[in-house]
Image 1 (cartoon, rainbow, N blue to C red):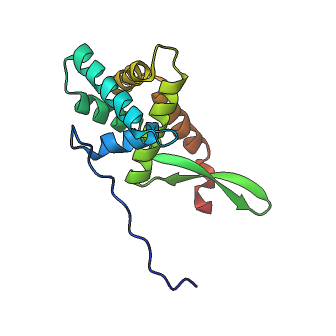
Image 2: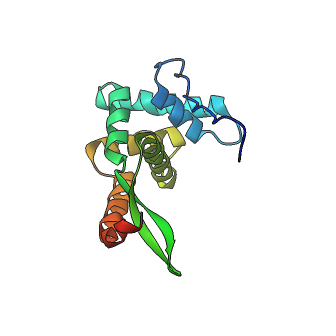
Length: 155
């Protein structure tokens, strides 16, 4: 048994320009090999492009995209009497938001295009409208959870 206390959850600090924690979460997920300044440049470039293209507040577009991609359910593999079953589980809001950001970035990276800022802004706009690869991923996850609803009692 551990004698240490439980570690408190770290909240991301708000970013310097928009003073928003969601933007910081996005920057930290974009970052590769510790290059945070490049991740900030990509994020702010994408948000600036959204501002110019849609004439809306880029933070509201980002929030709407994340809200639409955020899953309510997911499936988790459980070992039950020798066989592995996919059991649908509800996801906590923080984990769901992290999943949504991860799916948005994966969909943006898969897109053909010039640079990451361009691809990210296009994916965020599509997700806010209700289309795009990240939305498809969420619907696929929900379909899988619905299909495995009979295994829900193994939770």
